[in-house]
Length: 251
Ligand SMILES: Nc1ncnc2c1ncn2[C@@H]1O[C@H](COP(=O)(O)OP(=O)(O)O)[C@@H](O)[C@H]1O
Ligand SMILES: [Mg+2]
View 1 (cartoon, rainbow, N blue to C red):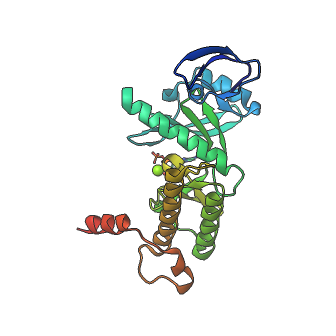
View 2: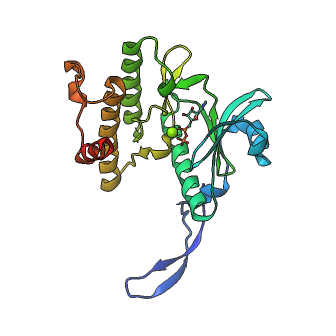
View 3: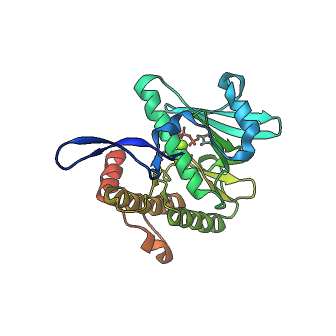
């Protein structure tokens, strides 16, 4: 949102504060105003109506986690998976923030094959995604594994090129197998979105998460880190944290 024309204060180096009327336009990005707005494309007027008085309890549950609930909303020419944060107070705030981060990540990957279409974030806390006729990799075997993993790697590389690192691809619940046997990446709730400009911490974290994503691809494809084909070995670069984590889990 942009506000044009603003009456404000300027801090004077001589420790005086002067009220100044800016004649020039001043553009301010009001980031926190996000919370109150619907983040939807203009074509989604019907969805805005749908979410204006949305009652999740009226819809079948697809999945439930500590972070929230996913319900299926079908009919009225829609077939959606809607993610809703759970809890109350600080917990709900935390989960809502994660959902907003997920929404920003979906915006960045829009148009790349192998991601659900995102219709928007409504009322600040209903993330509306295309319902996928697909099964999690945990419960499905891709008919052509070579094709599946080649395609998945391409999707990961494209996602990174758009400035999104997933961070939770080791979970076989977060990669779906479509009816055609193609991969679909879901759950961008832990994603790190790379910021442009000078943001060294964000950019280091982004690079680190990209590394984790490549290691995750190896883990998904080979079920571990042994007996990796020579052609794929260059992708593996496990961090100390990953090694220690694995050791602890093995005990
Ligand atoms: N768009 C979708 N269409 C169909 N099923 C979905 C969709 N998104 C998620 N699911 C199902 O819900 C499960 C949990 O979704 P996920 O986004 O990973 O949520 P969580 O943040 O709870 O891990 C997935 O493993 C999948 O089975
Ligand atoms: Mg998940």
